Image (cartoon, rainbow, N blue to C red; front, side):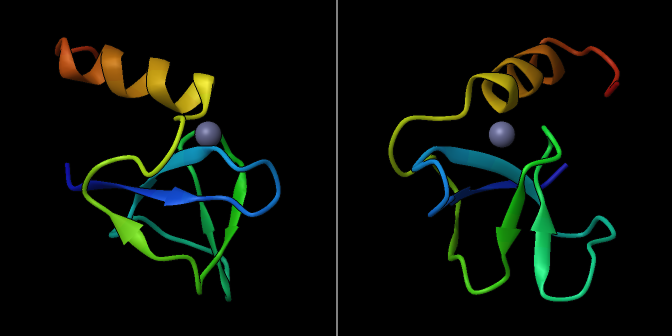
Length: 68
Ligand SMILES: [Zn+2]
């Protein structure tokens, strides 16, 4: 899964975003259900400190677990 990271201007944490998943108009839904504005640049690596929930989810998926 092509997960990218977007830095939220709301909490200044990097959230994991699946670019190819469904997103509401104008925003990205992060893995932790945090909402990011669609103008947020999505990066391959987290810019800044990753959100704890997103980091935990990515870690679990990296180990081969199923997404919740
Ligand atoms: Zn998050």
